[in-house]
Amino acid sequence: MRGAADGALHGEQVGVATLAMARLQDAMLAEPAPTLHATAIAARDLQDHFGDDVGASCWRAFTPKHLDASRAAQLTERVATRWNDLRDRAARARVASERLAEVLRRARIKQLLGR
Image (cartoon, rainbow, N blue to C red):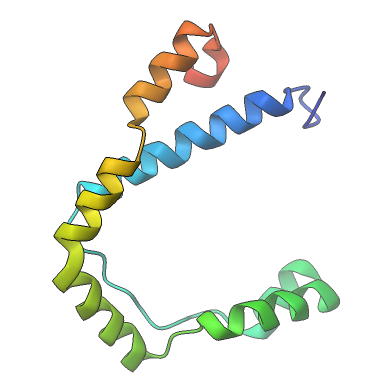
């Protein structure tokens, strides 16, 4: 099954996305607790990017997740007080990016690894 215009197989795209997200997770887990910020995007931004109908639909889905400065500060504090436990739980559940890269290497998917 072909995917993108470049001819990449769908499975290759999934492999790239999986490895990229694992690397992002590795980096996040190595850092101190994140600081959350108030939402900076507006409905019009989504409509400008996705078109009026899809942008409005995205905004409706996003609205319950919208943070003002007060709620962002509250959640930042909550995450900070629980960060070590959250990080430990995520670390136990994840597959390290090095392990994923090795699996892909053994499968000879060189283009995914930039080699």
